[in-house]
Image (cartoon, rainbow, N blue to C red; front, top):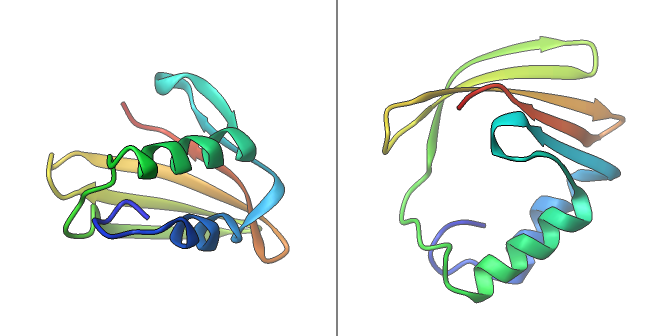
Length: 102
């Protein structure tokens, strides 16, 4: 959804993978965000022309799977920073994303 030329339908496709009670947690960048809050901000940023990337933002380095969760280590291509994120699942939906990077 952050690529140049993205549409609101791209945001909808991403958010269709999230559970209704989905939350995003990133203590360094403000704490906890609800699905509704993130959706509204995503649409707002798209309409303001802020999503203009021309290539993928990350390269996945490692994935460690567990019971209803996966930890993903990824490289942010532009900055060279390594990010660690944990995805938690309820059924076939993402219920929580927790970031462990600054």
